[in-house]
Amino acid sequence: MPKKSKQTPDSSKTLLQQLAAMPEKLFSSAFKVQYGALCYREPEGCDIEVLLITSRGTGRWIIPKGWPMNKKKPHEAARIEAFEEAGVIGRVHKKPVGRFTYLKWLETGQVAPCIVEVFQIEVTKTTDRYKEMGQRNLAWVSRDEAARRVREVELKSLIVNFRPNT
Image 1: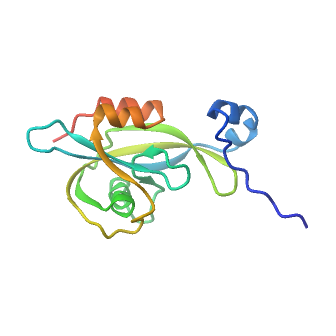
Image 2: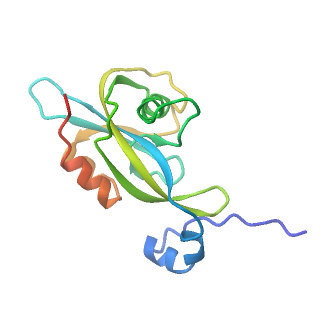
Image 3: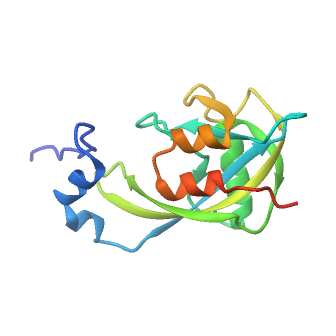
C-alpha cells in the first residue's frame, strides 16, 4: 500500500492560489473555533506593547491561540495558551475584545477555516520556563509594528484599534 503523502502549503504561491487549487478542502467542514490572547503591557511613559510569537510551522507572526479545552471557559483557555506558548502571566478579561478568521493547515493536509475569539491579557509577569520554550520567537512591539508583522487582515485591524478594557 503506498504511503499517504501529507499535503503542505506551497510557499511559492499566494494563499488564494493555494486554495483555488483545492476548494473542496476549504468548504468541506464548518468553521472551527479557537481562543486567542492579545497580550499587552504598558511600559512606564510609553504606549502599550503587544506580544507576538512565531508559529511553529511556518514561522509567521501570530498571537498565542489554541483549541477549546475541556472544562475551561474560553478566556481561561486563552490564558493557558498564552502561558504555554509564551510564558506570560496576567489579568485576562472574560469578554472577548474581538475575533478574526484564518485558515489553519492541519497535520492531515486538510485546511480548516477558523474563527479565533480574542481575549485581552494584561501581562504582569513573564517566565522563562514554559511548555513551548525554544520552539517560538517572541517580540514585544508597538501596535503598528504588530499589525505590520501579522498576515491576517482582521487581526491587523484588531491590533491597531485595540484599546485595553479596564
